[in-house]
Amino acid sequence: IQARRIVAPVRALADAARRVAGGEFAQIPVTSQDELGEMAVAFNTMAAELKQQHTLRRRVMADIAHELRTPLSVLQIDLESIEDGLTEPTPEVVTRLREEVALLNRLVEDLRMLSLAEAGELNLEVQPVDLGHLVHTAVKRVRSAAQEKGVSLTSELPEGLPALAGDAQRLSQVLSNLLSNALRHTAPGGQIAIAAEQVGGDDVRVAVQDNGEGIPADELPHVFERFYRADRARSRDTGGSGLGLAIARSLVEAHGGQIWVESVEGEGSTFSFSLPVARRPEPAQ
Image 1 (cartoon, helix red, strand yellow):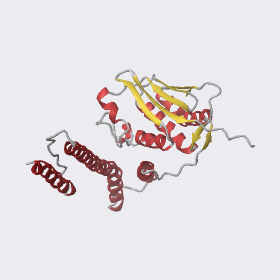
Image 2: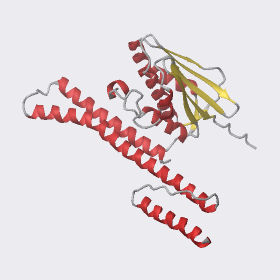
Image 3: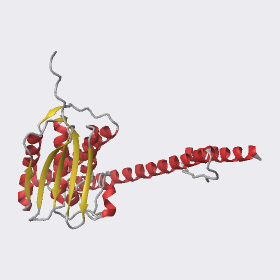
Image 4: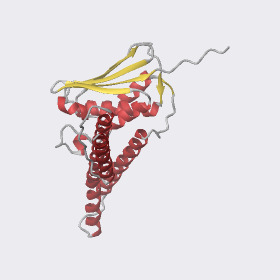
């Protein structure tokens, strides 16, 4: 009897392992509190995580196909119309085609960078980075778009902030992505503000705050996922590709930092990230 108690769970585990190998993410019953029971719990946890990763992978592939389909369809229709003589290749038409190609290039480059960052293979040129200059450059980049939309854009940085340890180009992209996201979700007449502070002696926290539409509480855990859009009805033109926040998270984490969001629906959102400060060189002996 004792032998059967041991052999039966082991056989069930072996059978479930074979099914997982075949793509069926099976769960096994937990019938005891001993080591065999702990092994069954661990196996079920592993199977559940594998199933989730499999689902996410399929969804990502579907999302990539969806994002590529629109610009490719526009290119195909316009080129076929030109070929059939239905459309003249005017400068306006050529410009539209060039814009669709540029959109495809940006999407492919974003996906490439995201894959490299998540795989830990993104090359970072880490050096002391002046946060004030970084913020000034990022604000300058989106100021005209903010003015055109009628959104106020301000920054408030205390004096004496230490330099960050990071890749200036990558960190500039993080700020640009967060600012673009805030601008997209802030109505005309709204406000966006950048603030920073030193936290302890080793980190600097940067926050991008807006008083826009905010994010529903049940959507907050998903905002940094690839191709996420809080409003699924948004198109790429009005809602972005859905890669900006995922890229921001990957770049911040590649620097050894953290990124998070706080939001109240209807009141606005604050996207914050913290990064380590640059260590001062040791004095020469």
